[in-house]
Amino acid sequence: MNSAPDPIPLWLVAELTYTCPLHCPFCSNPVDFAQRGTELTTEQWQRVLREGRELGAVQLGFTGGEPLSRPDLETLVAHARQLGYYTNLITSGVGLNERRIKALRDAGLDHIQLSFQDSTRELNDFLSSTRTFELKRRTASLIKAYGFPMVMNCVIHRLNIDHVARIIELAEEIGAEYLELANTQFYGWAFLNRAHLLPTRAQLERAESAVAAARARLGDRLRIFHVISDYYENRPKRCQNGWGTTFIIVNPDGTALPCHAARVLPGLTFPSVRDSSLRDIWLQSDAFNRYRGTDWMAAPCRDCPEREKDLGGCRCQAYLLTGDVTATDPVCDKSPLHERVLDIVARTPQIQPSRPLVFRAPDNSQRFGTTAAAAE
Amino acid sequence: MNEISRHAIPRIARLYRFQWEPVQNAFVLLFPEGMVKLNDTAGEILRRCDGARTAAEIVADLERAFESDEIGPDVDAFLAEATQSGWIEWRAAQEHP
Image (tube, rainbow over all chains, first blue to last red; front, top):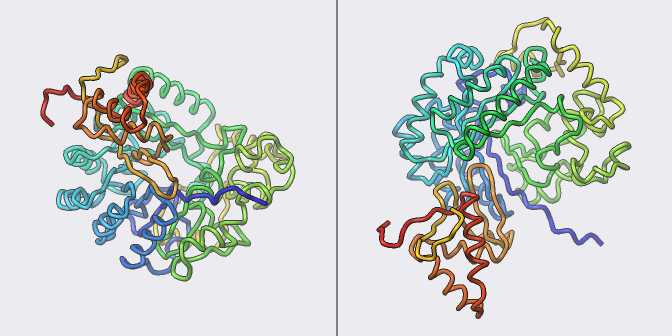
């Protein structure tokens, strides 16, 4: 008899839209985003938020794409706040003018996470394919003026990792309470662009020193989260704190996923909030149960004393690097295929990418989203 | 702040939101992209940190509620820890909010 309580999806991630003014080549949206269905309506989202809250979800991320592209964002924030969510807006800052930030504050928005692509205008604007660096700085002032707690997020990779000390200074200058230095993980767009984006080990070590020095200098004034690429670990991370343990991601078209990259996995049919309640999706659907817990594991995970700790690691990474969804995440040095990761890392200092960066844009989505395009 | 002044008034800090979560059967502290699930004792203390009562009044109220007169030191210890964690902030009793 299994008496373990049902897991609670503490985190609901509402990807309101794939529309985005930015074109970052490490975007976490699926590569085939341009081929996806129509967006959920305001009323459909309101039902999803209510059902999530009934399941116990308490953290709510409004993201996209750029969630400010949805004119009903304020309505949804107000609804969510009334339901008791802690509401996080995860934004590029584009579209956050004074009228909207005031409306969001009045709606009860709790926190804003603002992305930068780099500490320099040149690289920020190159990576996003926009002229937004100055705009983001102005947006940061607006966020502070309206009293919101602010997380600054910067995705870190080979092209900007040498700027980490300066990126930390930027976070201080704009008054962020937290800084997330999220090293690129290689799925989706980042996987396509891995030859450009994976840093070298020497770069990573320099960045870690810079972060340690900044933490010593700043203490509690700015909390810095530095999550390194799995490729430089020898143990895998839990997938989203464990498949079907904590997160529900709802795509703009209503597809519900245990992890934002999971659509690449073969052999799974993901449920839609258009057809099922969030409760049925969370508790009953094959997709959310398939890699929940440890029963699905093969060797060496099945017999590993650490299997409860990392729950086998990331299913998408296992599939992308081995072709087998049920394989041990090969970043683990107990994986028989760990050599593949070591080879990729070893080749990185010399690698000459054979194609330019592929930017996240509808035409590239059409071109690269139809086939399982490979990393180099 | 290591020494808790019983005359000062604690309240939940600006970065945090404190609320009851029925599904978890617990009080929680919410902050940007995170949550702390509180045990019963922490929940009972923090729910009284409303920005109106002094630490002394909070202790007195807890002693009434739990019919004990020995919990003061535990409350002080928890308030010191909560201050260290940034969960609560203080103002002097004579200031007006």
